[in-house]
Length: 186
Image (cartoon, rainbow, N blue to C red):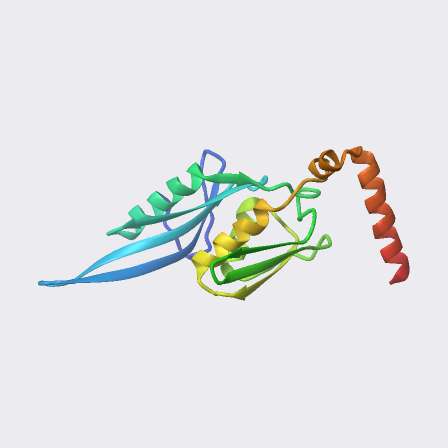
């Protein structure tokens, strides 16, 4: 594993995945001779093309906890459809426990406007423009899980057209009409 200078460093591997260390938690167990420390790591892994996953690993040493978390993240990945390979198709919300997040599409050049744990997820998925707000819990585990809940709700317009029994081109034409009407009003 490459040495890490900063917790937001990217670690590019030969398998094409980027892993982002989101949080490390140190826990202590009091025993007869003193304290025994353990570490828990939360890692987000993505391929920068729409696939992303997160994992949690525990061990006595930090590198081992990170390795376990990375393997867990690679085992459980989801695919997120992106519009123009840069943003979401539609606004969405997600929740986990007391954590709630709101994700909004953004114009080109906006960048990633989001808090730490959510930013790591968006960078790993390969998103360039998104506006996100975390409401409720600021616990990194809940924020990441709520973000994944919101991303799982993301639907590609082709799937929406198929569910409604419409042609994809018809749906896109309606979208252009709505977006064009909104621009004229402004």
